[in-house]
Length: 191
Image (cartoon, rainbow, N blue to C red; front, side):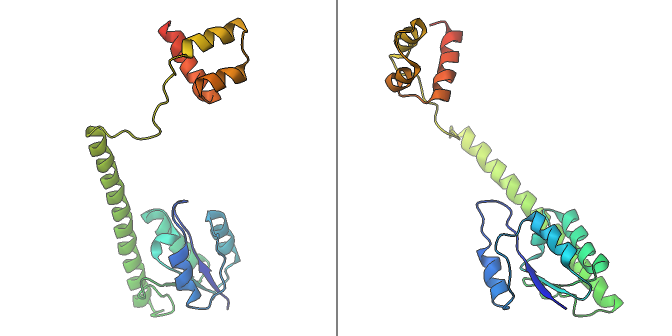
């Protein structure tokens, strides 16, 4: 029997530090940069009787369906023991009889549902916050850089061939993409 640990983060803003700390307490050698591809490779590597530690059930998937499916694959198809560190009741080494398996599956389904519901609530609250901020006039994203006062004059010089494009950028203080955006607006505006 071999022992493994699996860690996953949902976005680049997150890090696996808390998961790694919990796994290191168990003295399990683990990789730091697991991703979904690595998860699939790990699942293929697992054999019946191996033991897999994870920090929390939401590391198994992004939603209720994924979590339940991954649990089924691990515990039923691969016949791997799984220990969820945040939920000691989700330890497949305990209660291997029919009742124990039923209780673990039931708890997993309930907790997976709660995890997905909380994710949806967080997303809804975030959208409400964004809408409220927009209603107050908050602008998101980078501020639009306006054309400098000398823009029309510099464009005319450039179009006549009096100055090179590098000089246009230097005299307007704009980057290439911004210059072309302002040029398009300038031409549509007919100035």
